[in-house]
Image (cartoon, rainbow, N blue to C red; front, side, top):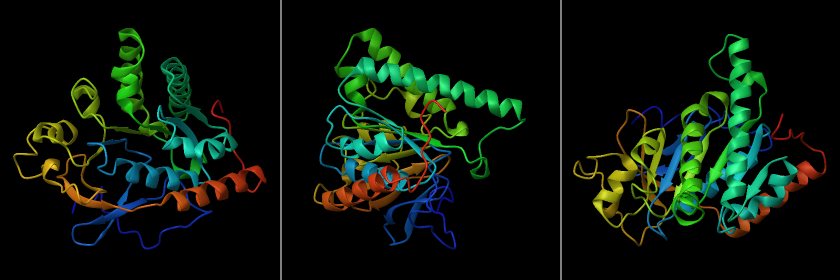
Length: 286
C-alpha cells in the first residue's frame, strides 16, 4: 500500500482536539483497512458522475476540518445544499461562503492569492519552506463544489479563464503555506479539468464514470487500460471510488458515510463551540 494514502498512526485524536495536521480518516479499502489522508500538504480532486458518492467524501473531509481548532473555511458551492449546510459555523469561524456567484468567487480567490503571498513572505523571512503544526497557523481549507459551474457554465469566458488560473495558482502554491484545495465536479472533462490543473492535485478520487476516458481524466492517462477504470464501479455501490496519490497507484476505497442528521448535529456542535467562545477563531485576513 502506498504510504501517502495509508497511514497507521498509533492514536487518532478526537474532537475537540483535532488538528488539520492530523491524518483524516476517509473510509476503508477493499481489504477492510482504514484509509487516511494527509490533507494539509496535499490538494484533492473529487470527480465522477452524479450519484456516484462525491458528496460523501467531501462531507467527510469538511466535517473533519470543522472539528479542527486550526481551521478557517472558504466554501464555494453554487448548489448551496452541500457546503451550504456549513454556512453558520463557517461564519462563526471567520470564514467565507460563496454561492452561485462567479464574481464573488473571483474576489475570494484574488484575496486568497494575496494571503498566500503574505504567508510565503513570512516563510522566506524565517528561512522556512512550509508551515508546521508548532507554528499555530490557521489552515485555510478551500472547498469548491461543482467546479464546472465556475469554470464552464456561468460568467463570461474571461471570468471562467481567470477562475481556472486562480485555482491553478492556489493548487500549485497553496499546500506549503497551509492552504489546501479540495475541488469536486460532476463533469470530468478536459474543458472542466485541464490537464495542467489536474496534475497539480496530489490526491485524485475517481467515483463511477460513464467512460474509461473520463476515468483517465481524473486519475491520469493510461490507468483505465491498466485495470483501474472507474467506469467498472457498480452503480449500486455509491461511495466507492479509486484513490490515487502522488507517485502511487490507484486503490479502491469505500468512503465513510455521514447522514444528514449526523451532519446537522456536527454543524450545531461546531457552531455552539465557537459562538459560546469555547474556541478562538481568526479572521481570514489574519
